[in-house]
Every structure is written in C-alpha cells, then in structure tokens.
Length: 253
Length: 291
Ligand code: SF4
Ligand code: SF4
Image (tube, rainbow over all chains, first blue to last red; front, side, top):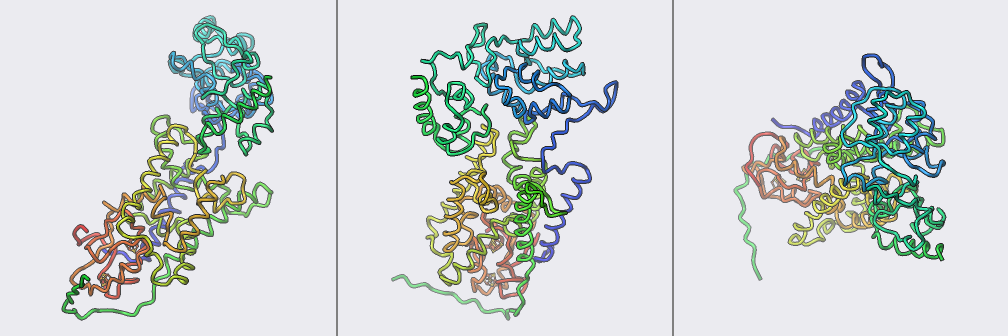
C-alpha cells in the first residue's frame, strides 16, 4: 500500500480535527480549567457538589464558591495568616507548607481540604488513610458543622497541632512541639533554606517589591518555595538566595 | 589524493517525469501556522474583550501536544495533569502518537508551526548560501549532535516530574515566538529563539535537529512506523536528489527504508517531489529492508 502527500494531508487533518470534534462531543476536550466541581451522580446528595472532586489546583475561592463555605473559615482552618491571600491559595500549596508531616505519615493537603469541606457541609466522602486536619480546622468544624459524637472523636484523633497558625511556613518540627510562626521566628534564625517561601520573607519584613526587584519577575504566589521557584525559572537557587538573604539580614539589624 | 570510483549502473530507462511539486504540505503548514498565531493572539484579544468569534480561546499550552507528554508521569502517578496543562493537550498528544505510529513525525513535518517557521527562515539562508546551505556541520560530529535532543528530553521530563510545573515554558522558543509580547516569556526562551533564527540561516530546522524534546519523542516512532519512506534500488539511478533535498540530511539513497530517528515525514525525498524516477521513493507499507 502506498500513500501520496495528499493522502497524508487529508488523514492528518481528519485525525486532528476529527479527534477534537469527537472529544468535544464526549465532553473530554477541555482547554481551560473551568473548576466546576463534579456533582454526586446519585443517591441522597444527587446534584450537589462532591468534595471528592476538589483538586490541588483549586483555589480557596473556587471552593468557597462551589460549596458556599466562607473564605475566612477555609483560610483560618488551614493556617493561612494573611486574609488577602485566602482567595488565591491553591489546595496543593498545603503540601508544601506541611511537608514535614508527610514523613510521619500524616498528610495535610488537598485530601484534608476535601475532608474539611465534606464535614463542614455534611456530605459523604471516602477519606484516605493518613489524612489529617489542622487543629484550627477541627475547632471551626466543631463550632460550625453538625457533627456526630463519633465524627468529633475521629477528627480530634486525626488532627495535628499547629499552634502557630502561619501563612505558608513549612512546619518543621511537628512532633508535639509548637513551631513558632514566621513572625515569631527568632531573628537569628531568619536564614533562607531549601524550604523557605516568599511569604516567609515578607513576614520577616522584606517587601514584595524588594523581592520582585531581585528575582526580576512578579512573585507568582507568595506560598511558593523559593527553591522550587528557582528550579522552574532554571536559575541557581544560590543566585536568588544570596541577595535575598542580604535583604533579610538588613531588615533584622 | 584518493580517487573516487564511480560505478555507473546500466541505466534502466528511467521513467523520469517533469512534475508539478505538490503543494499540500505547504498548505497544511501555513494553515496550522496561521491557526496557532491567531489562537495566541485571540487570548490577548479576549482579555481586551475583542476575541475573534469561532476561534478557540485556548492558551498555547492547551493546544501543545508536548504538554501532554511532560504530564504523563504526573498523570500516571497522581492522576492529574501538570500545572497549566489541560485535557486538550493530552488528547492532541494521543492523536500525534496515532499519526506517528502510522507515518512517523508528521506533526514535525506538517503541523508544528515552529518547524514551519524555521523552514521559512531557512529559505532566506538557502537564497544566500545556495548549495552550501544546510551542509555546514561536518557529518562526523553531526551524527552525535543529533542525540542532544534526547538528553534535553530526559532533563525536561525529569524536572517536570519532580516539580510538577511546566518548566519547559521558560526555555521554549516556540512559546517565545507566539507569545513574544507577553511577560510570561522568559529571557532565556527569547535568547533561544534568537539563536534558532540565526542558525536557521545556515542549517535547516536547527531546533528540530538538535534540541526539540518533542521531536525526540516522535522521532522514535520512525523505527517502527507502519508507513515508511522506502526506496526501490532497482529503479534508482543514484542521482542522490533525495539526499540533497532532505532537510534533515538523511542519506535516503543508501538504504531501502528510512529508519533514521531524524526523519520528519516531509516526503520531500519521494518520487512525488525530488526523486526524478517514478515509483522509486515512496511512502508505503511493504518492501524495503533495513537501512
Ligand atoms: S526528506 Fe524524506 S527522509 Fe528526509 S525528513 Fe523528509 S521524509 Fe524523511
Ligand atoms: S532521488 Fe534518490 S532514490 Fe530517487 S533516483 Fe535519485 S538517488 Fe535514487
């Protein structure tokens, strides 16, 4: 069997546009993140948004809109400090903040947000093992959600103590000992490490503008770990760390 | 000095024909170039409230099949795509794979607007340098240079998998070309674009040959694609017209089927185009041993 260039042209166009048309009909062709949370497909809660569909890329604003939970509750429950950052905060950012917990087999991440939302709204959800809630979230749930005795016991058991509700600081030593919030970090400890975020720098008194001058770019999200940011920008972490550290040092003098 | 001995074959009555060169590929290339350019522009127009109707308002990431490729790892392990990549990119990736299984990297030779852009720039180089054009890099080192794109591919996949972010955007000259006005484009990508444009004046498709990680992925399909570019030695008059025209410098005339990972399925070497003998270089399923 032989093919001419006309055949290749036609087959290429048909496959590409036919594929797009077909997947559009099947509702698989998505060029944007429309952030529409899927709904329960049957049962008592049919038609209601299903917290199981909350994804890491969803912001607290998306979730607040989809489930009608006040932004303030979401932000406070998950230890965010700056109310202006609540709306744009993406669930997956939690994994970066509570990274140290993971090593202990306790996870505070997107799964925890799903859990929180489900309990807050009284919706059914299959919770994955190892999913924990921050203590602040438990308190909010106890105050605002209708929980059974059993649920209260369970969330109390699966909660992690984050006495210092920090914006985005990695929780380093969580084994019971309270971690000071960034603003309470002893001045001498203000050293940029591999897990330091832009938000921490701001908490230490460096302004957004000063940081942006150094990185020669806009800060994509305050919660981003500086080291990750440098990787995505393909620049050496050190080349950012040093001038930023100088700034921090200047502020602490 | 070494003398080359040319053994002339008893020439079979070559059924050489004067033929008009088919324009289908150029048409398809121009179509996709304009389409992608308009889509990138539409995103800006949309933000200004002046979007072109009936045209997708997708971002460039949403229509780049390579986005699907770099997402594979995350998709398999976590079940989600990486940041900025949408389902559409994944679907386009599957379509591109399907096409590649059948015909090799047609996406490179027929669709990719950045390949087209390099080809167009190369036309200027060809005008300036004539026959020397696309023959500047010594074959001996060139063979090895052609594997650099696999190193880049491995690196891009690794970094994307570990950071789950579309880091490739920061070094992608294709993105830079179609978004040069946007502040999303990094300086590095703009520099790579500039270098590519300059090199295109000497070498055809320099980025495809040496750097494109997506071309590297699709290139692998050349080894087992169903329709291969095959040459019939019995009717070949050894004029090497096929070798001369190949943008990727593949020696089509030295084998019976093109298996080079660099072939972009442009079909320039075929009897429809450069080869002067009818039915001698063709895109076909059967016949032809390994090159
Ligand atoms: S000229 Fe032939 S061998 Fe060369 S890239 Fe095009 S199809 Fe492949
Ligand atoms: S173009 Fe290539 S295949 Fe065709 S006759 Fe010349 S050498 Fe042979």
